[in-house]
Amino acid sequence: MLTLERKTLIQNVLRRDGRIVAKSFAEELGVSEDTIRRDLRELAKDGLLQRVHGGALPSSPAIADYHVREQMASSAKEKLGRAAAGLIKPGQIVFLDGGTTNLQLARNLPPKLESTIITHSPSIAVELAQHPSVEVELIGGRLFKHSIVSMGAASAEAISGIRADLFFLGATGIHPETGATTGNREEAAIKRLIARQSAETILVATQDKIGAASPYLILSLEEIATIVVDADVPDKLLEQYSATGPAILKA
Image (cartoon, rainbow, N blue to C red; front, side, top):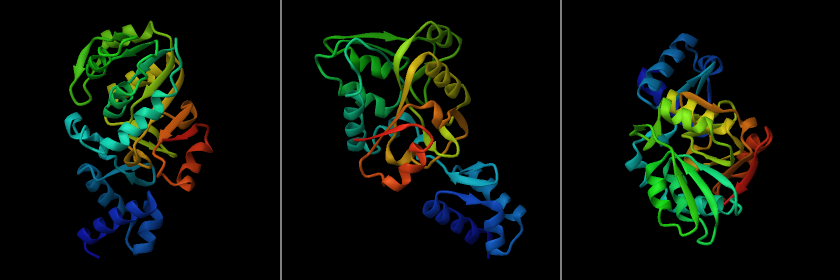
């Protein structure tokens, strides 16, 4: 089998099965494990999969630039945002992570909700400026342009002084093996810090993020209280997630 044929097969198997185990896949094809590992390295370099110990997982499409992601699955994000907004109770202090799905959450907050929303996303803060009864606190710092959020030492210091009831986490991938992941090391660290300062972490995930992985761990599944997903995600697939702790809310 030619290299191109192997790589095409690898991507087809990832789409079908959600993972590749290098050793068993090499045995199946009758090639060396080193050959498969080399193929996986090259595909990972091109952003076509995410390497993990012993094999590979599908790479998240959510690593695209913010303005590209705004156009992806917009109706699904609105539905997820509406369901997630319903989890916020009056009087709570809520931290909204950046991202296009959380932007929809902000847009779908009930007009009469009285709450404090903290965010390090200028986009979300501007959206909430129109809300009549929500107090908005914006965390400053260095702007990370890919996600349109502030990061750095100033952000971390401000976040360390916060105690939130809920944290709505944004991630580029969620997988039973790797947990919630993202594509930038510093952004992952900021998200972990926010989670530590919050009583409960909720992940709102579009279907393309389910079963996908990115390079940097944010949280394990055990550290996430609830995952909000589209109603079309099969129950059998979600069993792998709920078995490790998170409640599953279908929008």
